[in-house]
Length: 340
Ligand code: 2P0
Image (cartoon, rainbow, N blue to C red):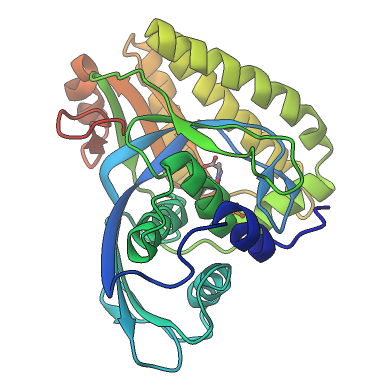
């Protein structure tokens, strides 16, 4: 346990010597969603969202969150999600209020307009891009001039996976060791992989019954299989980093799929069991494996939801789309998007 609260750490250390009042009336920012190739599953500390292991993701280019902030003369923050005003008692607004309370003067209120281009709460990492965009927009609003790696710590305090959503490209979030998380930061990798494709196969865009936050905690507390997880996660992370450096797609895909399936095994071994898959998810997995047996190199990964994310390279796009005609194919390294 840290001797400091997250708010004390943010104000006294991260933002020491920087503006405590907004410097602008409004600001806006965009952050991409991200898909972990080596997953974050399990915290060593809850209030700072500190992970047990590091993780590595690829950002989803134009699939993410655009957020606009404006200072308003009102008694509380007004939060609009995809154009709809959200009630003050919704989980989303409460989470945002808590996060803003880390640094926002008590008498300053914002109108927050946040637009997701991925289905909210469907396991497509919208809380990651949401807090990523908030962190970037607040950096502008206050004129903090923090570098992105420092900003990743404040994004993490909103949602762990948000620490990976500040950049395009491959992003690594290192676990760190400190109690206050000053070393639990993310950074972008220099490698680009223009031929890499991520296909989003939406089985259901309904909100999930068990949040990843709750699911992660239940797994850590009750799953015997979770004891095996940190060693595998650390090893997978190192292998994936090497596969990226070597541009070895087979190794990348195989390790990412194995990592995701092993994470789900820890969830199934929790009590009560945690199964985010639906029948359609399993049917789609079988189709991926059949396709692979037929010689098409395609791998899958899944998060805390029923949807699949397929990993393949450009030359297999047509063959993959023949089987999954509704697939939303993303080019993480499309030329306009740099990994910075
Ligand atoms: C990931 N997930 O690495 C993993 C894989 C879900 C499965 O990060 O409690 O919403 O806010 O830190 O970031 C989802 O967890 O959880 C997640 P909190 P978060 O992408």
